[in-house]
Amino acid sequence: MSALEKAVALLGHLQDRMRHLQPSMGSLIHGACGAEAFAQLSFLRECDGRMGRGQPFPVAWRESLEAFQDLEGEPREILLELGEVLGASELEAALSALDFARRRMELQLNGAREHRDKYQKLYRTMGVLSGFAIVLILL
Amino acid sequence: MEVKTNTDRFDQAISTLCERVQPLLQNVPMGVKRTAFEVRLRVGMPIALTCAGKSWFLDELSQLHNVPLQNFLVTSDDVARSVVTMCEYSVHTHQHEFVGGYISLRGGHRAGVCGTAVTDGRTISAVRDFTSINLRVARDIDGAADKLVEELFEHQLCGVLIAGPPSSGKTTILRDLARQLSGGRAGSYYRVAVVDERCEIGAVYEGIPQNRLGAACDVLSGYPKGPGILTAVRTLSPQVILCDEIGAREEVDSILDALNCGVRVIATAHAATLSELGRRGQIQRLLQSGAFEKLVLLGGGEEPGRVEQIMGAGEFFGKGSGNDDYRSLLFDDRDFPGIGPVPPSVGP
Image 1: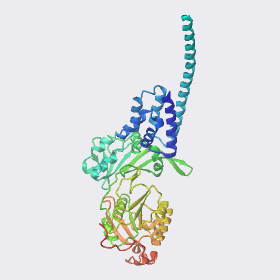
Image 2: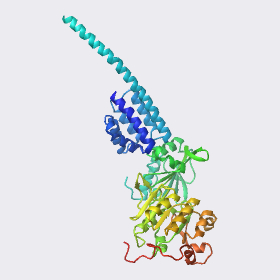
Image 3: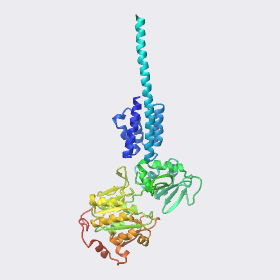
Image 4: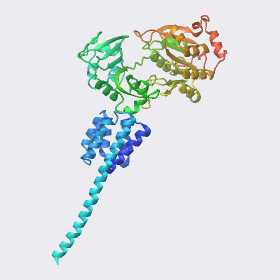
């Protein structure tokens, strides 16, 4: 879930940078991978390195994400889809795509949090009950 | 990619196009690579190359024909993908350039783009559905302005208007003039400010000039010419300002302001003949004000950069062959610091 939280923060960061600076995709990714806050998202470093070796952004983004194990399922799909829009569209379209991706990612994050809270209570209750059961058996 | 020759420049320029059309262009004969200065992609048409003022059409075997064949046609997807690759997958950073009709590329090349305008009232806010690309291969020709430097700048700076039809080499000559005047080849390291609205002269890309412009040259990249000229005068104290393709009222007003500050201006304008030049209202206004002491007319596209005629601006108005009347009209025969005869010992 930590990677998911970082991914939501990353999308907000990319949106802000793009709105205010309109950097090239190369400098956008390079800037993000240099930020301590996103150190856990190692696919950014991988993508930056690939672009530095001359790989086009869409290919570098896709291949880096596919090799990244900490995000899977829908969150990974969201980022993969984003790679097809970023850099290939004008500013407003890119900002809209980032905003849409961030909202979808937040839904995923909220779902993950609810899932965690629900099962956290369940496991806690089960732990207490198991403890009582063991005590009863021992008595 | 290390760029040394015209062939390298051609290869560098076509590397910005999409993957489907690149191989065809890579395989054209070396002689064509050396001389081609335009590559044109038009949806539904074969790839066209312009060499020595003529159009040639490419077939699927990279052979050139003087009539268009139908065996390899550019698709709308080729054009759309090429626009994205030319922007280095950062279309959003170039969208203002689309509105102006061109994209500046790494290496100093430039692509004119044509599509459907999205208008916001009366102004163009964006361009969509691209239909053509005119990729202009940058030709950095050292010595293109030798004749002008020799004839016009050997002893002192003067205001010059360079006129010529499209593809006559105006920008190439202007770039070499900037390099020679600020690089000491005209006898002194003149302080040159280049107002490079379309990023063609210095071709600054991500903060790095892609063309050499000499040791004493400042480049105002992307500045509209009018505000750029005024900024240069206020902040850079240049001896001479260079700008490309003048003609708008605001630009002419700024040039006149610069002249009143003792700065000489070297500029270019579209015009195939002197009479065409005379019919352009703002240019005529500029000439009548005494902004330029010399007029240079370039020849047509078959031999880009060929100087057809150099004349005193006074001659243009039938004031005799001398330039002195015209000069005194503007400067009252004043001498400006830093503008004048150059000591023979100065320079490389």
